[in-house]
Image (tube, rainbow, N blue to C red; front, top):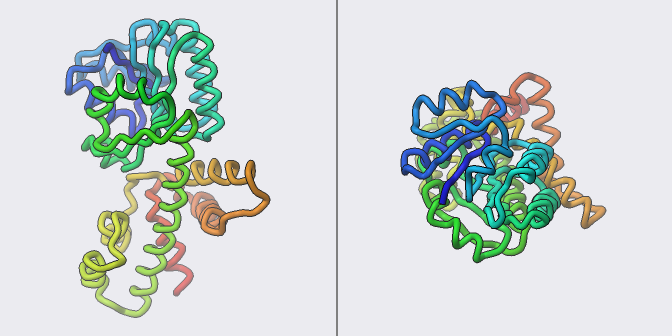
Length: 288
């Protein structure tokens, strides 16, 4: 199945690279052409000058971009060139409604859409250990699964179009809560004068152990916030979660609201491109 990849950002580059290494990548498209050209020099694949051109060459198209408007713009551009029965898989994090709209657009030209957002950060994309939650036709997923297995370790079909993105929203809300809990707890321990590397070592093997503590605990204590997942992008995702909640309820979820307030403060201070563990900066400040 000829495969094309759209979006060579922090996540997309690694996913495309893993497909290329497996000999499965036909062509790539990125709005910044220089990124595509650099990628072509590294791997034996072609460069498409538009989503429409890419769609003409491929049976499977994987998208990795940042925003809802980007996804819909790309899908609308692909419509003019896409072949019947092609499969489009969006790994971006967007709203469930955007996924449903993209599916309808492609259905009108006899093509298939799966919303397949991923979790695992840059490390997961690089190491092909991503978790992928998929909304759409399960039979279509079955056709694409052998190729998706090259970029994701765990792929689960959730339900109809939009359900993959709704599941990613669950993940992003949970990630916000974990970020709040870990950064606050470590700031407390530091303020108490504890030997924090030892604290992390022992807590990491107890009931409070979690991925974020294990992978970000010691780096945040040393003041390192190299992004695995940019704070600004998590803010975008939580804003999507917020809008999804507003569509079903007049109430709010405090973790989302509090984290958005904290993230805005950090972004205003110039930390939006740092890892989400930069929340530790605020927690430290609050206890000084």
